[in-house]
Amino acid sequence: MTQLSEAKKGNLTLEMKKIATEENVTPGYILEGVRKGEIVIPKNLKRSLSCPKAIGKGMKTKVNTNLGTSPDYVDIDYELKKLNVAIKAGTDTVMDLSSGGDLNKIRKTLLKSCSLPFGTVPIYQAAIETIREKKALIKMEKEKIFEVIERQAEDGVDFMTVHCGLTQQTLERLKREGRVSDIVSRGGAFLTTWMIANNKENPLYEEYDRLLEIAERYDITLSLGDALRPGSLADATDRAQIQELILLGELAKEARERNVQVMIEGPGHLPFTDIETNIFLEKKLCQGAPFYVLGPVVTDIAPGYDHLTSAIGGAYAASSGADFLCYVTAAEHLRLPTVEDVREGVIVTRIAAHIGDISKGVKGAIDWDIKMGEMRKKRNWEAQINLAIDSELARKIRNESRPRISDVCTMCGEYCALKLVDKVLHPEKKVEKVKRNDSSNESILN
Figure 1 (cartoon, rainbow, N blue to C red):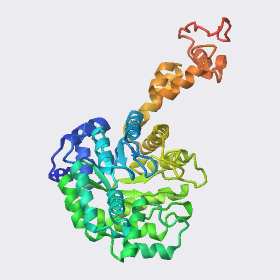
Figure 2 (cartoon, helix red, strand yellow; figure 1 turned 90 degrees about the vertical axis):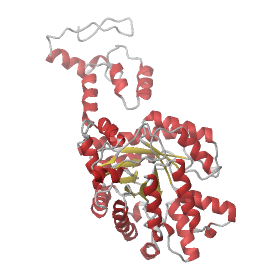
Figure 3 (cartoon, rainbow, N blue to C red; figure 1 turned 120 degrees about the vertical axis):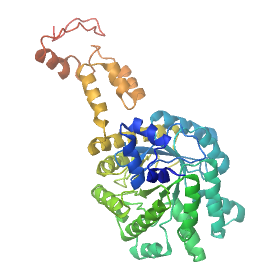
Figure 4 (cartoon, rainbow, N blue to C red; figure 1 turned 30 degrees about the vertical axis):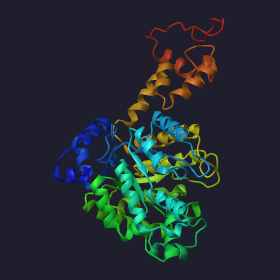
């Protein structure tokens, strides 16, 4: 039994009912979207999930947070702090991309503390364990890959990135293309190294049926990874990337036929003008499957600000039809993110997602903004702070400003446009005497 198999039978699952309430749509809308493959609900059958999420057409644009150790920095407690701050900041899903330390222990620890859908990239663990055990990535056996996938599925992982579209043929296309940045996907790099050294086909493609069998048994949502995503603007929307996307569309169709939920991963680094085209191609070639994009980062020249470059791209991507944004932090391309990097990355990506939701006309999205506008007109500062996507920061800035007149801010002070116009447009309203923060009682409104 999977969410997709139940939808095909016309059966509403508990998750569909919960999500319908959260998304402010009918349960039938969710069921039909899942049936068509336009909506996915990542939830492993082995796991009890208190906060199920839906990703796809008509749903709020979702945000993912990547966590995990590196070979240079292994601290499970610190990763738990990142997890907690990401959840508090409003992330919708979490992925463990750990590459250092006890990978099983790290994953299980994070899973135990996570009430949200949880994802992994199994090829990381398969490659890293092979290197530790056999001292060479090229000695990895295909059985190792599927054993790790099964192990992670048994732990309760809800969705997995699998680079099934990386084949010997697409690699040949890449070689002929001649890229600036070649391959920037870590999973793609692991598989490419193994495939070239052994002159063998990608096991995830060659034994795709085996992968689907595991995914169906646990109801794991497959996130078909873009191993050939562009890592610089110069490589965007090239033949290698699009050939991989065409193949992912074919694999997505096969997955649905096996009752396996599937979404498609996308770039990456893209010029702003390529974003709409990339989303159109994904939706067309992959039969409307949910599109999961990293950023996209829309310029390569802003290390330290890539949470902003990706939020700019993410807002346009979501507006154009992307369903799922993977956050990018200020640490991207520079180092492992800190707790504060994670928090800020989630917030700016949520802003991008919300902008997209307004543009797409997601039900109720603009209501939040309308409410904020109403509270600004009333100069209700407490309500504005509570409505802010980052109330903590809004309160801090407000408290630091110390306006002389308590119902305005220090930008305009007594010349506040809202306050002036409110009195002249609505003279019938009683103007309350407002306590000033200094000893003066003067006001141009008196």
